Image (cartoon, rainbow, N blue to C red; front, side, top):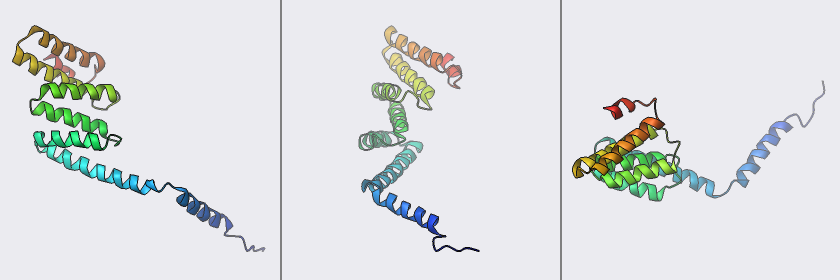
Length: 161
């Protein structure tokens, strides 16, 4: 049986390659990971406030979060929660603007049907307060848009109601 002094060489090469790869990693990688961790923590804290009905406070915090963490992986959800907070605090024009931003910037957002339904509800609230036919037309158009774009959504029956 032949023995070679290099029998562990493949393992040593893997270790060496790993060390070289780690050394070549940008210095900012660790900082980026920490920033993501901090953003996730802050996101969860604000979401807890939102889920507990603290909409006024969460609206302000969501707006700050969006400014500070515009590249965060769940930024689309932050926009959605901001808009919902605005809707729940009866800031209907602000909610409409935020829902429109969400639709434009994140057209593949998983809850876009809910966002479009809530947008229509914000428009309906404005129409109910103003009693202007044009406002009701905008609310109806928003509902029709949601129905047309999300025919299988659980919000469609509500939209017909």
